[in-house]
Amino acid sequence: MNTNKYSLESRREQANLYKTWGMILLVIGFGLFLYAGAKMIFEPQITAGLGTSEWHDQFNAMQSYRQSMEHVIPIFAVGGIIVAGIGDVLWKKYKTISAGLYGEELVSYTLNSLPAEYTSYNNIPLEKDGKRTEIDTLVVSKYGIFLGEVKNYKGRIVGNENDSTWTQIKTSSAGESYENTIKNPVKQAKFQTYLLSSILKDQGLHCYVNPYVVFTGSESVNTDSGIVLRSENEFHNTILTYHDTRISNEDLEKIRGVIRCLQKSES
Image 1 (tube, helix red, strand yellow):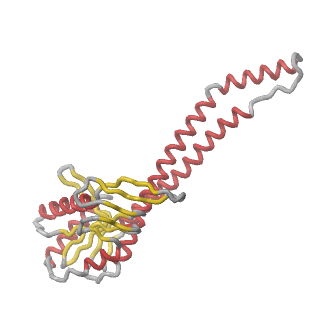
Image 2: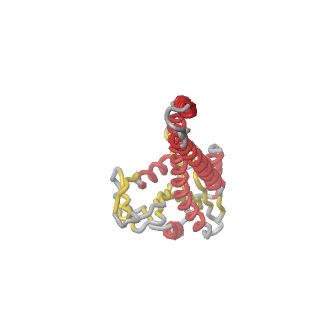
Image 3: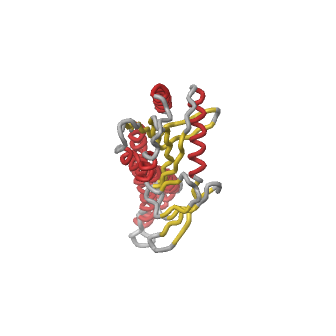
């Protein structure tokens, strides 16, 4: 199978950039905060006997130090918290992007075993009439167009096709169960399908796009939707169940050209 991977590589570079700067800012932030704390703890001390000239000198030195540090210490402390906070945000973005990329790369690797007549694309930006989205994985062949909305979620997933949101149920390291609310991925996949179909239609290409939601790494997925697949292998095998030719060679080349243009618009 032919594979276009440059978008995955671009997103991996972006994730690594978040990781690098997240770590740098966390270290700088904690350093500034610790510096402020050290300045408070290790101020000049009075060791001379009370009332002596040396005592007065040390007392004046301590007062002078406190006055000079009156604004400096809070600035370093608050600055450290802010910088560390920004670093934490960047680190969390890295973790989020990295987790999503792992799922997409897993799907891409699995789809590589499809025959040569299939072409896969990753991270295709779509925009029309002010509406924007991005397709994680798209496979194009004469047997049809297959869209994959990839979700690399741990734990158990619960939700139905028409629900506004779904629920992710995970277990903490302490053994306690907790829930996260996630977007309905079926609605995401169908919106992407609508937008892609509309863009292709504008180019005179009337092709049906088959949408799927592909979960990777989830313990279980409980849903009433028929387009939800529980693994990357199920997505691969589902694509191979389509045997009838639905797209002519001429239209196939046009579709591939449109997708390449969409990907170039991202760079």
